[in-house]
Image 1 (cartoon, helix red, strand yellow):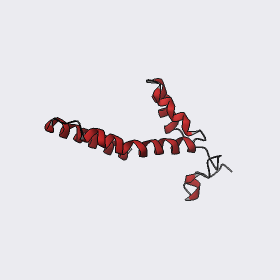
Image 2: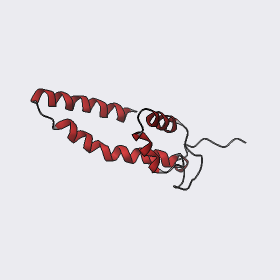
Image 3: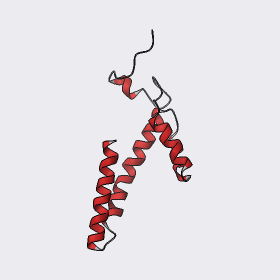
Length: 100
């Protein structure tokens, strides 16, 4: 959440710098620099949900795709290991204990 806020603030600052200098240089460069890490985080989150990273292409559908992805991203991940590997929270002991 803090990372998204950081990206938004830096994007606004880059836009202001572009407006002051009369260029279109800083904001596109920053956007390209953030693109690959953003895709990686999205794919990683989809893998935590036991979904393929290709589901990220759903964001290309205006409005509906973004809403579906947001709902998936805020949901709880698959408990335990799935086909993409072990539960990352289970490795460090943060996974909730199973009901007894």
